[in-house]
Length: 264
Ligand code: 5RP
Image 1 (cartoon, rainbow, N blue to C red):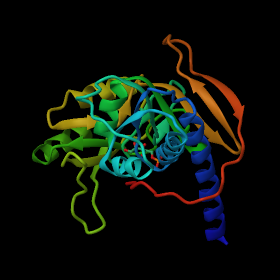
Image 2 (image 1 turned 90 degrees about the vertical axis):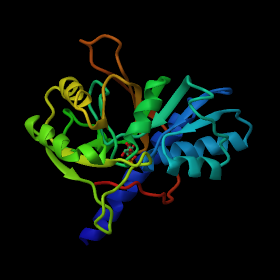
Image 3 (image 1 turned 30 degrees about the vertical axis):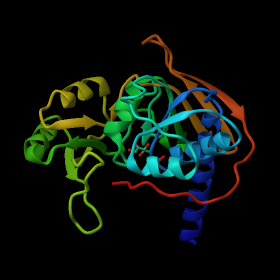
């Protein structure tokens, strides 16, 4: 009984992810350089872009992970590198949490470093998410921090001094999970993060931290699946105003399964 309910909830979540991913893929225009995100929601955007490419859309993608590069090739999206195209028009990527100012926690799928490099090089970052990702305050999801193995213990101590509880991400066989860049990840429970900007600054200033999953002020638009519709939440340019939400009706997405990203 409980399992059936869980399955139903998973299916509803998948529908919201697909609705968000497909809606975001429609924003891409002919000639765009597109940052391709990682995770089970970005998956739907990449697949939808592949369909548009097959129908004649001319774009070049820059993937945020080896996994997404494989997917993009499989669906027929031509790829380039940041060296060849250091300016990206639009990046579509998922998130583990989204707050009312469109600050994000990312990195549940382990791709935070390349995701942040690509988001920062983009004119516009569009976040795609199911409705469970929207939170009033960031921090329920453990914050991923990518570290070089050499510095792990000192970084763990620093994180504890900042109020976090770090846990080394492990693979199923018990060995440390390694990112596409060969680094380790500490999943850090902070509880509610009252000041994400200050925490981001402290983490960025810690030697041995390669990158952290706080994305502050990078997302310009969030497309959030909610039932059969999607909400569009625009980041406001001023600090005082909060993001604005608009509800858009969409057709219910088809029911089909997708690959899952790894979560801590
Ligand atoms: C990968 C990420 C993902 O975008 C994030 O984990 C969300 O994934 P999903 O869409 O599968 O919930 O940051 O590093």
